[in-house]
Image (cartoon, rainbow, N blue to C red; front, side):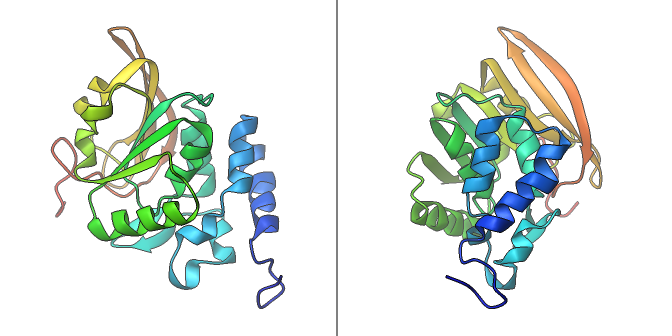
Length: 224
């Protein structure tokens, strides 16, 4: 079935092209992750005119409420750092559209996602439910505090930039787990990977990036 302009209804060709041109050539080698990026219909996590071929472009796209859905490559890169095998419990800080949560749901056993904006949390929950993701749990709240009831986590992804690594999230990171968070000034951050080995935390710097700001205690103030 075709949409106007001859684009396939489910955008399968666009997903294949996204993986082949934007993701695999940049060092994303996890085959389960590449399969998830080919499978999850990114366009259904958008509303309005962006919910089409532009959803598969090599850039972030606004989703309303001052938030964005990350560039496909950045979603893949942050996810690959978690080294998921299928049995993990993962925390996501910043549900946004729900797309990152859907990718995580394809690769982990359970995903717990916290969103501070009610409209986005409600929309993402509805979209994830329609797509059949029963292993994603969305909570309205301050993500910088994590979701301690379900800790420890095997992996934590923060989809907003923080001035420093949130202490509450490192406390909820399990032994052998990885926390991926953009850290730095308001307009430019460095992707930072924290891994736990028993009582020791190891820090590694990844690529430069720019994310919307992480709001909350230990993050940015809303008006900054």
